[in-house]
Amino acid sequence: MLKHKKIMKRIPEALILLALVFILPSCGESKNKGFGGKYASLHSGTFTVHCEESLSEVMDRVFVMYDSVYTDANQTIKLSTARTGMEHLLAGETDIFISAREYLKDEDSLMKAYKVEPHVIMNIAEDALVFYTRNDFPYDTVYAEDLKVLMKDGTKKYKDYYPAVGSEPEFVITDHYSSEYANLKELVAEGETLKRPLKTFANIDLVRNYVRENKNKIGVGYLAQIIHDNTLKPLMISFLDSTGRYRYPHAVHQTNILRRYYPYIVTYRAYMLEDLRQTAWWFGKFVSEEKYITRHYLDYGIVPVYAKFKLIEED
Image 1 (cartoon, rainbow, N blue to C red):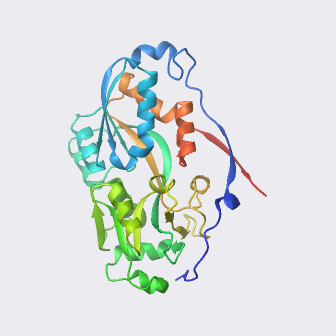
Image 2: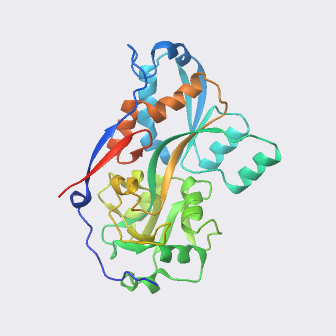
Image 3: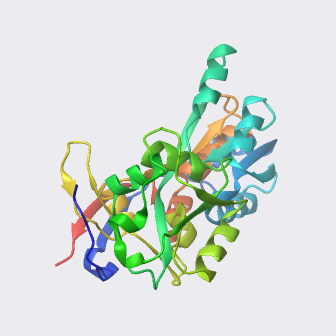
């Protein structure tokens, strides 16, 4: 088993920063910007959006921008857990559900049992599931294979792999209704039951505060949740890629998400209740494809799906 015991200094982002030259799709030209013109009449209806709370810090501004452009549309935004939002979607009680996870196995089975067709999904942006700590945590890197064992085998100890931590660290995450919990299970534990004891909280603020205020804690969340917080650091992760090639740890950054130099990549998705070209459907197109919205995702620090990138390595 490959080991990474040595304490590594964080790689300055400037050393790995790539110039992002992107070409974004034009979504129409009109006095109302974006999806105006012949589709303007489709932005005057009423619809409901459930958005999981874990994505709210990224998506809040998107909702405000939509509201400011399409003043005749009446959108009701409800924040919820990923589990609750999906339940409302499957029950036909929301027009759109925005989440960072796929269907869970029981949801997929339920849909098949009741012959519910998979929903139309509009991909929005890519983010990273990260393991983050206070800046005084003694390690900057971790090996994905070690994380897999730690999550799948409740008897293994983190300090056995990384002894400089001293006492055993506590892993902290939002509760089992969240997409973070689902993605930890699917991406890190390969779909198996999580046997590692985890401390859970109801929302991301509680998780971040607990990690900030207590030594030797490892938070699990999304890069977007900590990217603007200089008191917390995401651990760089070495891993074996799909070809079995060993990838050295790289800074957790949007360029390395794009280059696939990070193992745990998640996609923000808009699940549509109906595949009808009505107000809710065009709202989904707005949050995923509109030019200045994709610029917002890029500026925030994640990777918009509807953009073409040319990566230019700096000298």
